Length: 202
Length: 309
Image 1 (cartoon, rainbow over the protein chains, first blue to last red):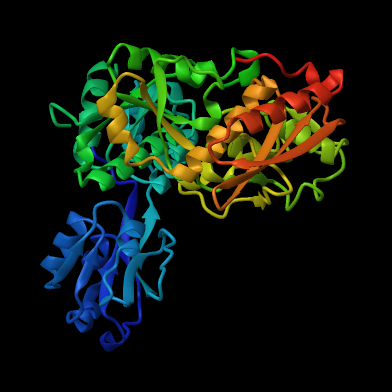
Image 2 (tube, rainbow over the protein chains, first blue to last red):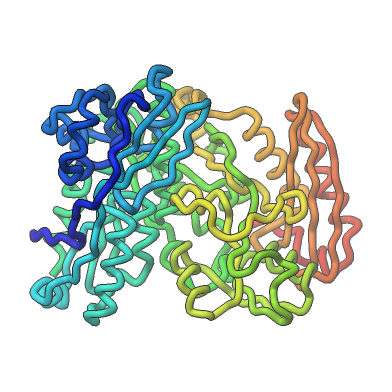
């Protein structure tokens, strides 16, 4: 099994707001803490509401106090916010899920990192020409991978896809040898699906 | 997965079906305070998923979506099956019961490729494989040409982008369940009536499986169930199948359902609309309405009905 980054994450310039204007930081990715840079220090007094365990861990490593760890995505986190977190500062990447705050909650956004799509290296393409199993974690990764398959002339019918979620599979489209969708959006579920496929892939 | 999940939910494997099954699981887990892995999703490849190049009506109808899941239910390999209620045959075997209907989502269709039906260019080629949408379109715009169009959302969007058709229709609920919000033009359901049971997710189980029925009852949404059963009763009265252009909209107030239904000839030239109001548990009223509409319909419409798949 080989992992190949399809995107490079990079810091971007951002204006750090006054922490006193907010009750908490809303974080949807560990990248916010890995790439947020010096500006994060000015916000260290704010508690963090993290989308999941990896984000919470990155926040903790940057000396933030984590108040909440979600399990079902950003919208689910926003849907059950406590009253004391009415004014939120969302630290996010350029590509992000639109959130719908309800009941008078306010969300301000700062883009603190960006992602750049990377070409699929020829050595991976050479492998995939013989067939293989590709796990895709996001809709953006699915779309980019499809584009790379077209660019490199890879035959979809030889490649099996494992998608982390239904919407990822949807973005990957059709024509693949097989498409499997993780029953739960976790790496463990993804690997459980990959194992039998990898054994039969070639 | 735990060795003994509390419930095994069968589902088709398509992205939309999986999204629906995940919603069903989330609601069950929330209702009972379970961890998500307490409900096991069991994906089953339906025959309909393997044949994507012909209209559903041509290859054997709605049963294509349910047959495999029915088999797994009868063999006890799953406890319940998640369905898009729109795809479930009107008449189901007695050994199956609809254990729950989840809260219905937005019933509207979405038009992709044009700002409105009126703004389609003259003679526009529009892709759909649903007899209802084809007839509705041709009724409003007889100059348009309808071509068969199946496949999942991304396949259809790709065909649209490639210029194979000028426009196509999708269901708002399906798009939203796949995280595609704000795509295309939402068609007001009061003007462009949706399909029977559109946007409703149902969970079926074995009628004699009291434990599963009891478990499912916690996620059953009464008013959604009333609407869906009413619309299915109308279908029963019409003897409609997937060949039949039927559109219907239910509105509810104070325990009563106001149901508007329209049936069409295949070319959309003939349209018959009726409405009925009934108490939510009175399924005879919509069933009788169906029979009445059919009795009054000219042959060009009636010939598309009266045969249940």
